[in-house]
Image (cartoon, rainbow, N blue to C red):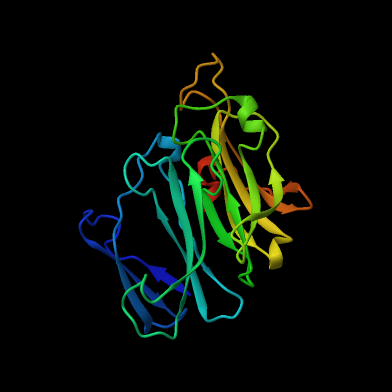
Length: 244
């Protein structure tokens, strides 16, 4: 499976972002959908400039593609709306939103900690894993706030739209950061996750960019994260972009 977005990155806000879905090893397009572009959320520092929030994943039936639709909503709202949608690749439509259906929708406060900053479905489509952010959209938080559920992975039920269990919670210190699901097994029993965070500034100031940038990447199960050895050439700010 290959997904490309020609000219989507450089297109102006009023243009349309196009996605082409093609079979691996074939140049023939399986289908094509379009949707209006939405403004990018503001960047908060160079460390977070490559922050990945979007989801593109298969369900285990091999027919449905899952993608995320994230909207900050109207100005002055204190939450973001994060939604996963599915689309049948056998369809012949051209409107990405009209031809797809919502799998789950979660409203998450922009303040800390966010309930559902990133989303990834388990293969069977009954469970969604949410990753959180801590103080990424503000001027930085506190180590106590980070330790108290700031960075975690939480399983949500698609049927109820509510959290069912915490899969892993980071208990160390940080002043800001986020978690990203890179791969999920059936029912979220096992997953591979990445954490990217910034340690508190040595002088105690609450500002981004002054603390050491740290990354963790590993297999998560039974509430534990077992780190995977990563190449030293890969910076901590790239852990959330690793693909499995």
